[in-house]
Image 1 (cartoon, helix red, strand yellow):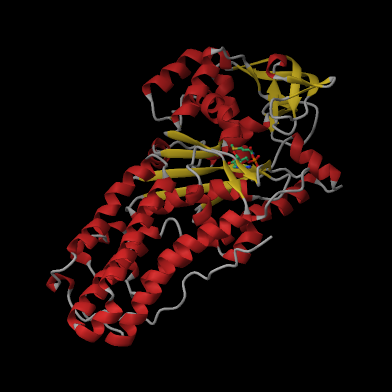
Image 2 (image 1 turned 135 degrees about the vertical axis):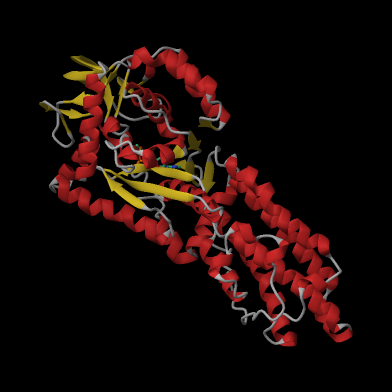
Length: 511
Ligand code: ME8
């Protein structure tokens, strides 16, 4: 049994959750469930990033006290974990006391290790990105500078503490070299390496011009820079400042899953800061792609954010999870449209999978009452259809390791397609009239393959997977991946419940 830590970014509470946040959280949930089904102990962490100028401004705009404001907005992210069926084991908020203690201790360790000095910062700051920029990183928009992503920047000049990031350039490059899988996908790894090779400047890590944040120990006019505050959440949740055996074991197997927008913070600043306090970097970072809405950037100002709650209420959590995971490879950008959403879930979930299970179990129920009639060991026909099912598990393992979730689903559905071809070829609805034993054999083989599909789909579409396993009366203790072998096959006499529709079909003629 391995101890594994999986984390989402902690989301800013200046705004409501949208499908981008839901996407990252679902990816983490799949990995968490997958690992648990393989017998590992998983901590799955998510939460909210509640300090900084952006959040303070959002509260001021609403004329609400920042703490009251973050208490309200954080709830929306908390609810996300519920309606998406996330199996997170913790929900961290950076306004919690445990986190304040952890950040201030982390800061002290940087001071003790001579990693911080006081100076003046003069330069550009984007409140939207909570990020400092050098002028050469900006572009002109009329008379103003903006970031390459179009965020406004303002010139700031204030006293600031600096982290000696420039000292860590070679250690970082060494680390990337020795840990080739640290940043995934590879294209992102190359970007990070060339960014670091270009030279690192010391990083401003405190602010003095607003009030909403964690105070710097022994210098209360400074607030800890919100990114140092936020990144530390990952170790707060492991009980930092205590670094015990449990901490080490989870940290050694930690995966940060993030969007490509915040890769620099996670793959450059965070490992450097960790090394500076003599802790190891996390095991790996996956930076996934960006979702647009019908080709347009999702943004509040364009009024085109998509509320995942509305989609889940309308179509179901599994349908949402399936679409987001199946539609695009994780490293690539994806485009959302309700039309492609409905098309995908109708074709894969309702037609291919739902219909197959429905018609098989209906036929079984009608002709063989509610019991499996024959032991699988007595069946001599069509063994290859089962062998392929059993072997799915090892094939998919590689896909999960490489974050190729869409490929994993593609393989499961290509197996489902084969089962559809099999039933069409065998025509058990005719066989029952001519050769009832053979009909029972065909249906039993299909039922066993549904057991395998039910088990393997649990990380991706947990509710429907459980419905399938419940129809087949599979014991809860026998739903782990280790039961996907022939010796645990469905046994003669197992009660098969009357099938109910698993996935409704939706009208795809929307305007
Ligand atoms: O950056 N497509 O928080 P944030 C895909 N608080 N993913 C998207 C997305 C989109 N259109 N929009 C958002 C922060 N995301 C910091 C993080 S962590 C120590 C601190 C997802 O609320 C994606 O995971 O802006 C992205 O990295 C994250 O939300 C940014 O969330």
